[in-house]
Length: 115
Length: 116
Image 1: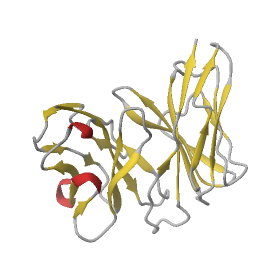
Image 2: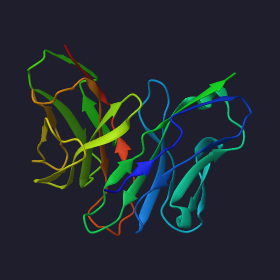
Image 3: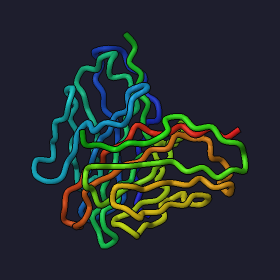
């Protein structure tokens, strides 16, 4: 079965530290890639997405992610985190195949940023 | 405003009762999804529907049922057969009438179901 793995379940950082959250997927075909964020008490929001073109994509709030096809990875990065980045982050993959489009999520990473 | 509406926000039910969670969208999206979110387990797909009158099981469909009689609506029934129904349920939708169409999912606010 197609799957998405987020290896870091909990991450604790101090403000101004750099962030990198890992995301790997299992499908070798065409994929669309997403990072969603869920702030405490709020619904899921799209952070950034990759469909095609430049593998380095920039999203809202200073986040970026790099699609590395050879590694089946789509890691999320931010050079300097803020306390307001405390949230849960989900990587998601849309496997474009014969069965049609279906969105599969990773298990999520809880980020806590200490002030 | 276009979007996805889930109701109610909080729902309490007694063990052994069936309960139906509502999800409505006015985005004219073909595809709709139901996810269950549990602490430490992320989002797991329960059911999805690519088109009206058609739906497929996701990874954890046992104990759940859905219908898709209208494009705008995708209600989820949590049956008494679901062994651990207490969870946060999220509905989503996306444009999905072509496998070549880039898609992005839009989420509702969620329904927190507590079974006592």
